[in-house]
Amino acid sequence: MSTVNNFKVLHQDDTPLLLANVWDAQTAKLAQEAGYTALGTSSHAIANSLGFKDGEEISFDALFFVVKHIVAVAEVPVSVDFEAGYADDPKQVAKYVKQLADIGVVGINLEDSAVKEGKRILGDATVLTAKIKAIKATTAIFINARIDTYTTKHPDSLNESIARALIYKTAGADGIFLPLIEKEMDIKSFITKVDLPLNVFTTPKLPDYETLGKLGVKRISHGAKQYELLMKKSEEIFKKFQQTKDYKLVLGS
Image (cartoon, rainbow, N blue to C red; front, side, top):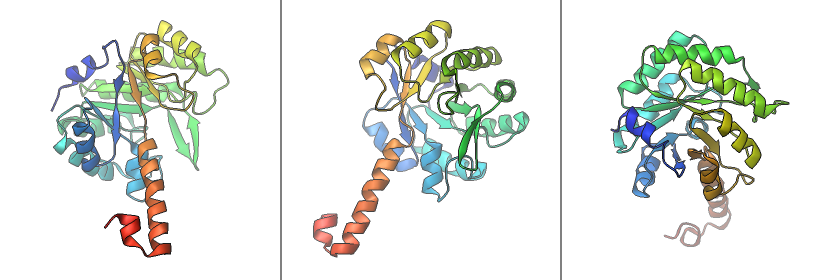
């Protein structure tokens, strides 16, 4: 398994690191075979595959079981979407992250929001700060601090993102993840003021890969989008098979 330093180096290229978001050992194998140089788990996809909604509805033990199987087949760095840490106590979060690091995980996403009654709520920056500090005091791992100002539609998303990013950098964050930032000017302004690798999330309005590289974006991820696409296709196949009973046509048998 690659080291944390090797993973950090992948965030220093002139072109953005394209992260393959996987949810089990099989998708990890497929992504590697396709040529991806790093894998990131999707908390949303893992939760859904186990029958739960996203938002820390699954336990840490359930997540750990899945991640352990992914790491077992991985020959490239694996980063885990760790949501808000699966605990409120920073020391407990740090213990969980240590367990992940011990099996070979080199990075995590750690967010400053929480899902409550199906709605994502932006939290106080001091909460994530405390968790980052606790983790860094015990474990050398790449922390990608996820800032949910855009996903929660903060009235001043850009400036609030910059302010939080600088706080998280001081706490020890190694990178910043800004889901739903899309405008070129916003991306450029953020990168100008925050000298940590920026991770963006794919959306229809996001600039193309080459433009993002020129702007200085260092990492691109797609979350559960591939999983959702495949599940939609599976739903169609199940319905068509049930309706037509023609397995040769539907399943290619």
